[in-house]
Length: 306
Image (cartoon, rainbow, N blue to C red; front, side, top):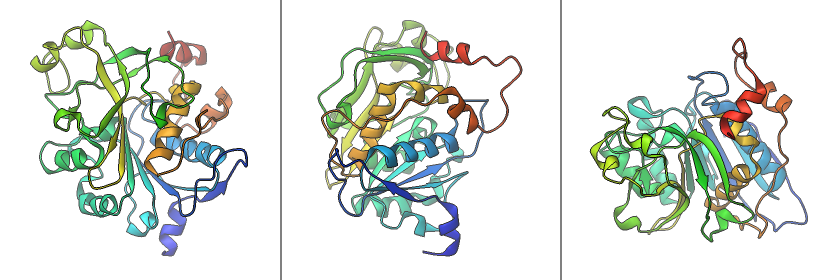
C-alpha cells in the first residue's frame, strides 16, 4: 500500500470478548462524499466516521477504514476489503461512475457493498445495471421518488440484519419505489412502510409524482433491503440517512451496524450489534460547518421523532 493511501484513511481494531469473533481478514471500508447540504444533512464524512467507530467498538476483530471527501485516488485503499460502504451524493455526477470497473472487480471477488441514501441515485443504463447486479436495486429518476415523511416500521422480517432491532419510526427523506431486480429475486425487504398518500401526489417530475408511484396508492413501499448475489457476495441498500440526527435512534443504528457486518460475512449475534447512544455534544462536535442561526437541538430531535 502506498504512503498516499496510508494517509487517506483511518485504521483501528477493537473487540468485545462476549460476542462472536468476526474472523480473519474482515475489513470494512467507507467512502464518504463531500459536504453539499445544510447543517446536519448529508453528513457523509461525519456519518462514515461514526459508523466506522461504532463498528470497531461493537464488532470484535473488525478493521475499518474511512476515505473522506470523495473517491480514493489510490485503488489500494480497497485492498483486502470484505465490504465497501458508499455514502455520498449521487446522480449524473456520482463519484462512483468513473470507477464502475474497479467496484465490479471487488464484487466479483465476493466483497459486500452497502449504498446509503443519495448514493443510490445513478443514471439508468450501465450504472443502474451494475447496481442491480451488486445490490439488487437503485434509485431511478422518473420512477423512484424522494419525499420527506415519517416511516413507521411496525413489522420487521426475520433476517440477520434485524436481530436485536425493534420496530421504530423516524422522519427522514425515505426514497421509495426503487428499481429492483425482476421479481425481487435474491432480495429480502428489510424496512417496509406505507407512505402518506401526499408523498405520491407531488408535482410530476424526475423525483416526484410519477404515474407509476400514483398507481400504487395505499401500498407499502420498501426503503431498505438485503441482497444475495447469484454468484456470491451480498448487498444492502438504505434509502434514509438524510438527517445526521437519525443516528440518535438505537434501533436505526443497530440495523445499520448489523447490515454492514452482514455484507462483510460477519455473523450477527441474536441481540444484534449494539452501540452507545451518542449525545448531542458528540454529534455536534464532528459536524462540518456551524449551526445556522436559531438552530435548536430539541427541535432537530422532534423533527425526526415527531
